[in-house]
Image 1 (cartoon, rainbow, N blue to C red):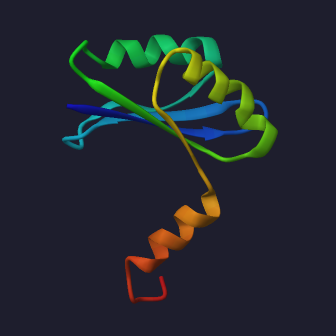
Image 2 (image 1 turned 120 degrees about the horizontal axis):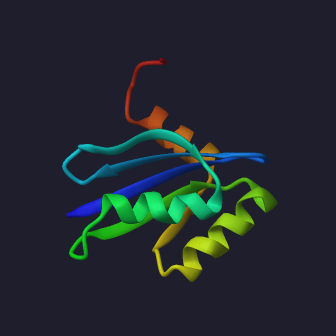
Length: 96
């Protein structure tokens, strides 16, 4: 089973959400500091789970958390919010 961690990076805080590949919420949205994040991720996974982390590309604000996650050996993907927004809009023909 896959565990996905989404992180909204900001200057003073990081908002996170953890979900599994079945769509079950493992940790509802929470605000966290870097040191606490690792403990929260470990509490949601078992040894057989694969973990993927996605975070918003926010320039220098995301450098510390990105380095931390990579040092912990977690596959981490930095996503451009403009690209994800355009992708979301491309999924529908409606102008919503």
